[in-house]
Picture (cartoon, rainbow over the protein chains, first blue to last red):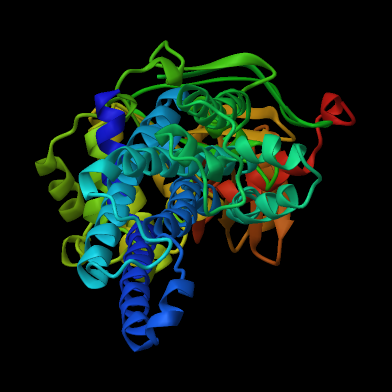
Length: 260
Length: 298
């Protein structure tokens, strides 16, 4: 297993799409910094009595939302790139145990997603605070960075979930297009649909959507998003695990059965 | 040693490989021939554990491929040289394979030099020609210094130097006692490289025979100023004689020595005695053109 992990790590590192996707995450963080700078500038130029109306979305949450999709795409490409070129056959002749290949890919993608995700929200939050300073803009947390760590760790776990969901969907569909389309549906389209169904079902279903789990896991709820907040942290963690486990098992079974 | 036993593989209703049995022995280059769609690549994929057979089995060194712990050290394979991700360099591409099979970094560098890619070891594969990709694929097959090699169309896209290089490489590897299974559509090249042939058609075995039996001498062409007299003498000695042009005869059933001795006894001058073998191409065409009776609609 160590050999497979090391090999998949070398592969992921030397895959061009990896650096492209990580570059896009960097751009997302850059946009967050620009947004912070714009909010601070706006605050300073607004007349005093209008400042109370200024609200800006939580920057770490926004970074988490966008980076989730990027890392899901990273997961997709870690598998679909090999199906597209036929290199999957080389992989399975080099490492004949397909279960081990899937596990090794999942392992390295999870670690990369966790580290990238945590770095993205931490940098966004820290630089955002530096720029906004003590301006009490609505939507921006006034809590100390250390008090927000549970939320940031929960976000990182949620990004790992998205990345593994992408990896497994790519293994199941063997197509980057199909896997990314399914992911965008779960990440963007589904929350909008769920937000528009009648109460109480909007909140009930909204609570188990992938994007709503980080806030519930950290116990902060989802004050700014469409998602519900009915789950306990433990239940949120269980739902998160299920989003990975179900497609993972399906991918493992299909890989073992299908011709490469 | 590769053993294919009663192997059958279906894709939906199509039978790609149909009860195929053959062994590939060490110490010689075995050519694997058959028309497009005969099941060559499918058979190779089953041997490598990529496709699951409907019945039968394929063993390498007595074991199923997917039971081998570090397969690259025992079996080297080149299936499709184009199946690489263009963003990597040869060092990166071979590097992860080596790591997966616990093969040292020095070996990666040495096979890259052996196949003549040392100058582009740090260039992206995306810009490589088909010939360079074939060399990279051969480097991957040789990486683990394996005792068994399976190569599907390795000479495609190689220049004449490359074709000769791979011929000598494969003959050398077989001479070291390794098992080499080689598929190719280039008959003249196969004739020069392989010692033994396995020919399949419609997923069934057509021939499993040494090369020299397929290309053995079949007739002798003789030219003489007294062709008529010679023809009578050769027929009397048991040969089958066909006239070819004015002074030429093609003789079956007698070898050049017998023909020479006979002509000398009758004091008939000979201008030419040429043994003629069938080329591999002719024999292959003849073998694969006749559908085996059982092969039809099964």
